[in-house]
Length: 426
Ligand SMILES: *Cc1c(COP(=O)(O)O)cnc(C)c1O
Image 1 (tube, rainbow, N blue to C red):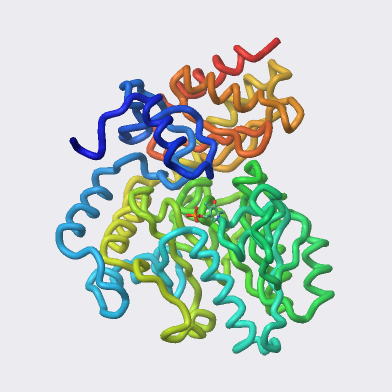
Image 2: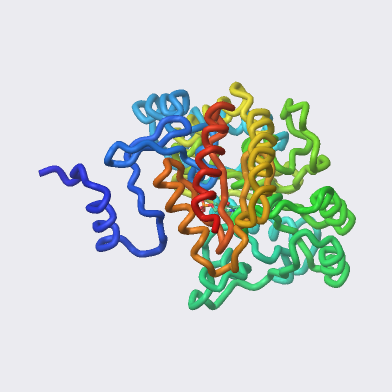
């Protein structure tokens, strides 16, 4: 008998419950197929995917161009390790650095690894270029951040569920309020050992908090004035999700004419993950210019799988799709439409407090206390009505469909969402 049997949804859930660690609390739906903006469960029911694997699947499920790049490369050469060169990595590095306008790229696999890489890079730069005394470097982070799940990263999280009983924690981080320039200024002025400021351009996991207009640019200017590296974690906001190639969209090659909103911010260190592979394969990357990246020497950092030929082929195709299908522009236009349509409904009800977001990274806040089950129950009803979404925290539901959606599909989704929300009015 084959090891992988065709299961019913309940059988699949039971197996995971019994044999898998309980480190997630999934919505009870078991998916077995995806194409574009749709996924299907094992019983054949079709859904709109309104999470996109936390914005990894911006290019849509199983994008043929990306899958084809993976299959072709997988048949040719999958892994050499960086003990040897391979003929794919350099091409990818050239394309990606040109796309995002940085001198160099360091390839890793997951978002958390890329964040770790950025932190190490920032510290090494602080000691070797800025001249901070060894082991004294501090990195400023924001409250309610989400940067991944490693020991160092959870050390500066303030989510008790992510932290409790995982100590002792890594030192060297100062936490300030998000979207608070005064707090940043005070932190920078009160400590001469600051090496970097790590920030999400929009706090996704926290509940899609969009900072005040101009916050990022002013924060960057403050960092520059103090010779502190501005580190943008664009693992979730990057690669067209927020209506621009990057949410910090600075001096990049994004040809989006609507690239207004946040003023131009060019990060010193850019962290990418998730959609850099279109959700097809784990790929992440850290980008920086030579004056920073050149502090990394052989042996300082690495990964067996980082920069492997399959990853390079997949990520190249995934970025080509973003460019060739104008996904930043699509996300911008569809995002405007989505919020406008939802606001029409919100004007008629007390159930939903507001919709917020940029491009196709949005969230609604349910008018209920934070521990209420309403958001979860709405997501269950959305599932029954053919659309998959999940609460981020408490009463906040994130809406982040693949960017390859058509206008008709988006309006269809708005109808499903409004119909579902109406079931919860009282
Ligand atoms: C998802 C995410 C990460 C972590 O990425 P993993 O691939 O899950 O390790 C880091 N930062 C942000 C902003 C993210 O959304």
